[in-house]
Structure formats: C-alpha cells, structure tokens
Image (cartoon, rainbow, N blue to C red):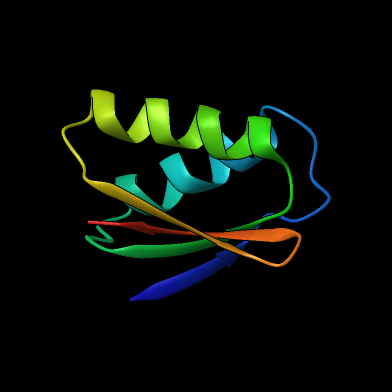
Length: 67
C-alpha cells in the first residue's frame, strides 16, 4: 500500500495527488491529511470511482485507507 502525505496542501492538490496515484495503477493507498475538508473531498472523489474509503482520526490528523 502506497502512502501519500497531503498535510498542509491546499485544495485541489490533495485530490489531484490521489487521482494521479490511482491513474498510475495503484490499487490501495494510505493518505495522511490534517484537514477535515480534505478528507471529505478525497472520500467523495474516491467513492465516485467505486473505491472504499476508511477514515481514522489520529490526534489532529487523519489516515484514509483507500481500497
């Protein structure tokens, strides 16, 4: 599972990074984010693609597992 760190990035950069990884053939991703709206945008995007997104809040950060 490839890890992507999108902490501190402004929209739409986090979604574009996830899109690029999925377009390159990655099937599973672990995304680390620190903004709730980033989590919402990535989740919405991935679910439109038929991906399952599991979110875990760890302190002030979020871990999204995309499968």
